[in-house]
Length: 336
Image (cartoon, rainbow, N blue to C red; front, side, top):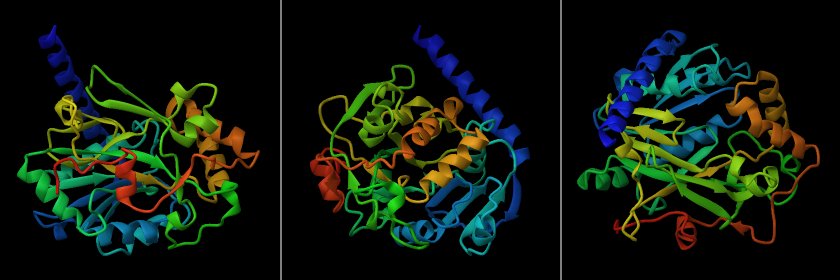
């Protein structure tokens, strides 16, 4: 039975690799600065559409962390995102007008570019509203983390997707270009999370938080998943199987300790709940390019008309990574 399962997983990985190979034809190079990439550079990979207002802070945040190069796919933006990114000296930019949904929500494009540029590098695959936080990130660059992971031959590093939100109606606080989003969306749920194990892929499945209690209160099991494995020492044989939730080979998904201890882990501070969210939700509903018939965006649209306040009496204001460690949302493991 185990042998059959392993054969099936290998076939599935090859199938997904072939999909990514075919989908490369949908991508057109805008500017290729990959010749600048050095052997030890840590790279960020992202797919986006119409995120111009977020880009200055997103790039600055990761540059200050120690990221040396960005590989980005622009999915037919019409707000100036492509032009802005093309002018950035550390960005290799691709564009496509093809279906985000048909590319398995952009992951086929990412898998191809990870294979093309990421082999042998530590790679961080994130969305423009996701900001990586790891133990000691306030005093140590990301290279300190990856050096430590290399020392212990760890190939993948998990991050809990932590939804951040303002106190009050979401659209009541205008976001300005270049602004730190967590000056506005500075609150989070310290608890209220459900964890299970995917027996096939061996990854943990996490749900809950403000999206479950506000937008999926009647069906919390349909709430978006919060488990991510964004940081990987990439090899051309690897593949993301479903967004950044899980990988193949599935050994990369075992980012937790079964023996009662804790492996080091991080968080992705998720700045989704910022103005102009209503405008973004309306656009995405019209495009119908998201998972499960855009179920998540339908739930947002239904509640946003009521100007919801995600803040509640259990909400906690974000201070730093040590606060997240106290709540068990991040762990330094045996990294000291």
